Image 1 (cartoon, rainbow, N blue to C red):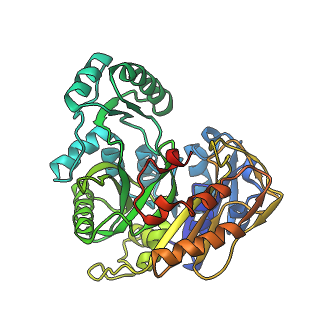
Image 2 (cartoon, helix red, strand yellow):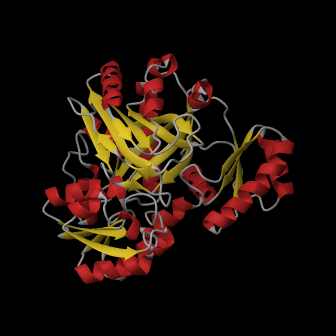
Image 3 (cartoon, rainbow, N blue to C red):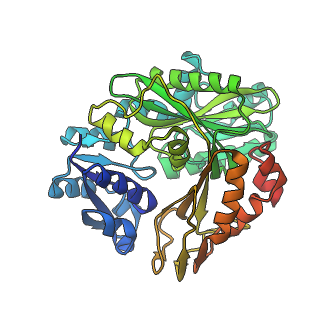
Length: 445
C-alpha cells in the first residue's frame, strides 16, 4: 500500500481523502493557497505546504509548485480529487515520469475520454448507445447549421473539451443556433484552449443518470450501481441519489453493462463515472460523457455498496485487489446527497463571506462532508461548494423524511447559502414521487 499521499486539492474533497488516508495509516500531505490557510483540511493533514496565492493558476493548477511540494515532503503518490488537475492528462503523465504514483486512471484513458467527440465515437464502436449527433467537430457555423438540420431541433451545442456542465447551450431553431454556436466556441477557446464544438440532439424531458465504475488492478472493470443526478441548475448538479427512482431492474442491467463496456473500451483503471441521458418516454439511454476521476457525489454509492471509494482508489493505484468480492456486489438501502453551496437559493448566484454560524446536523443516517467551519471565510476564488449533506436509510421514503429533518437542523449564517432550496425541494411532490427530470428546478422557479 502507498505510504505517503499528497492531496492536490482543497476543501471538502481534500478533507475526505485525508480522512481515509489517515485511517489506513498513510501519511497525508495537504497543499494549500494563501486563501485557504485556515480551512480544516490544512489542519487535519499530517503535513501541509503553502503553494501560492489564491488564484488557482498560481496554486491548485500550478503543476510545478505541486510537484515541488511532493518532492520536498517525500510523497509517494498524488491524489488529484476532482476539478483542478484531476482530468489533466499531461499532469498525470508528468506525475508518473517523476517517479510518483498517480491515484487515478491512466493518462491515455483521460485523453481518450476528455474529448467529447472522440469519446462518442469510441463508445459507439464499443456498442454503447450514443445520442444522434456529429461524429466530428462542426468546423464552422455553416457546418453546424447543416448538422442541426439533419439531427432535428432542438439541439445541444457543446464544447468538445468541456465538462462540469460548462460550455453547453440549447438551440431551439436555426436563429438560436447561429447565436449559440459562436458563443460556445468563444467560451471553449477561452476556458479550454480548444474551440471544437459538437452538435447533439437535445431531449427537452430527460433524466441524467450515471454509473460508477471501478477499473481494478487485475484489469477487470466493475459497475457499482447508478446515481440519479437530474436536480440541476445551469447544467450543474445539486442533488444525487442512489439507486435512481427512474430506473427499472431491466434498465439497470442494460445501463450497468454498457458502462462496463465503456470502461473496457479504454482499458480503464481506478474510479470513473459514465454519464448518460435517459429518455423517460422510451426508456432508452444515451452516453453523455465519462468523468475520469472521483465524483463529488461518490458518497451515495459508498453507502449503497458498503465500500470506501477512496480506499479502493488507493488500492488500485498500489496494485492491490479490492476489499470486496467483484462477483458478489449487492446494493442495499437508499442514499441522497445535497450540495450545500454558498449561493443565493433562488437565482443560485455566488455569495461569499465570513461564516458566523456553522451547525451541522447529526443523527442516524446523516453524514456531512464539509470543507468549512465556523469562522472560516468563503472566498470568490473557488467553487461555491461548502459541504455535502448525505442522508441514508433503508427506503427512499425513510431517507426523504430524514433529509427534511437534517436540512432543518443545518444552520449557516454569514454567506448566502442554498439550504432553503432543499427545504423547498424535499416538499415538492414531483421530487418526492421520483418522477422528476432535469427540468424540475426551472419548473420550481
